[in-house]
Amino acid sequence: MRAGIFGKRVVAFEPIATKWVKAAAISTSVAAAVYLATVSWVGRADVSAALKLVSADTLIALLALSTINYGVRFLRWHYYLHMLGNFISIRHDLRIYIGGFALTTTPGKAGEMARSLWLQPYGVPAASSLAAFFAERIQDFLVILILSSLGASLYPGGKWLLLGSFAMVLIALLVLSVPAITQSVLRSIAVHRQSMQAFGRRIADILLLTRDCLTPARFVLGLAGGVCAWSAEALGFYILMPALGHPLPLLPAISIYAFSMLAGALSFMPGGLGGSEAAMIVLLRLSGIPMPIAVSATLLIRLATLWFAVLLGIVALSIRAKIPLPAAAPPASTPAGAG
Image (cartoon, rainbow, N blue to C red):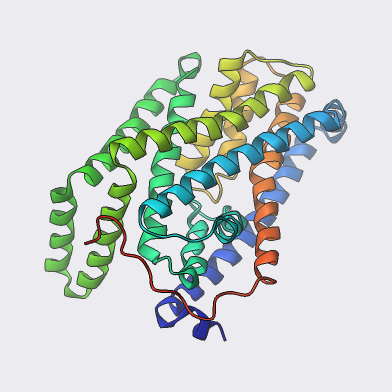
């Protein structure tokens, strides 16, 4: 019985995780329908002809670069858990981290927080894993902004979107770096709603641990890792375009890919679905790329990045079912800064 394995504190997560699974299934079905509709609208024959231009070697290179992205981000995640006093083995942590990708097509990638549920039997408190998750999201968002800025001036209104996004990141970092701001907000919540006091304390714990993940040295290290990870996927987009017969310069190609990911993130759609694809097609068309090629490039890069991650996540979850969990959670180490 799962309640016996995970403990009473984890039971509350399970209905949420079930909702995430349902949301991921729905978003996947919707995405498939939208992709098919787009192909039909552009012309199946034209898109099919464009897709045939891409060799197996190019596809393998795209998947390899995506794998580099996942690997570097995992090392950063594992490092953060380690710095917070959680010493789970790489083997189990990798399986759980990749398994979270199965739920990446949930709004804001919130489904990936199911890792907190799966990590607790290994002695990793939910506060630590959630702090690592939020630290990752902040740094990834900042990295995407940096890569987008490489060519944002080439597109109408691009710089204003970037400036607004940078402001959002700076506000988040300010809140984390100045505990008095967080404590003031949480105290205000507690005063107006007594029932929110326990919730406010949990949020405060998570924010304090997130701040521990983003100390200057860790922030720089994590940001460098994020740049390497997302540059790998952007490089995949760069090598895809000449394979389709329409090469782009390196910096505009990286910017188009990153800007599309940013548009998807700001759309708050599950996995950026719809927003990322639409932005990429529009930016490619503004760069003079024919519509069938723009649609084909978008479909291929999304299959090799987002949907490849989802597939790996499903495989990791199936492996999880075959590897026994600990009979009981070992005592959790005291996270750094929690005392």
